Image 1: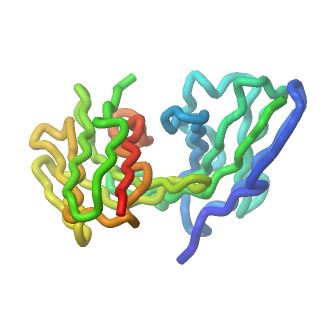
Image 2 (image 1 turned 180 degrees about the vertical axis):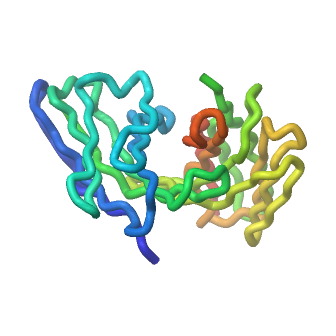
Length: 115
Length: 112
């Protein structure tokens, strides 16, 4: 069964450094998302992306964050200057349509640790 | 921001017992999805409910969407140790582009 893949599985970085988290969504999917989950807290929406542009972003997704679909397969999340509070699991997700019953498929996440 | 409250936050039961997890909100959702998340992995979709009053069964799991589409429940019959995990509900609203808003999760531990 096709799946969403994320790399790396774990990223350790120093405060102030830039990180790029990579995702390969399911190939025929059109809608892409990034969520994050701080340890012990709920899964939070960051951004949605469709037709090569951001559809919606949360208040968490400030100027330090950006997303890109550089080619037909990859979907990346960049954090320009990481802060300690950016430490979290970052999940990429994709789905075929944006209807209410369109299932959302998640990758296994990248654990980002900012020191 | 609509809030999805899950209860209880943690549930510990013996194998063979039944359990129910609740997901409540003051907002109306166009759909509600239930996920299960294992440590170190992403959420895995169990079911999507769309119609008010809808009941869906997945083997020993029964999912119900409230008539007003504001709440949902997950009932597990004769729980097994393999049911241990974090259960998440997530709601979608058309006005919000059907992006998912997650509840805080219920951690279920089924002891042998």
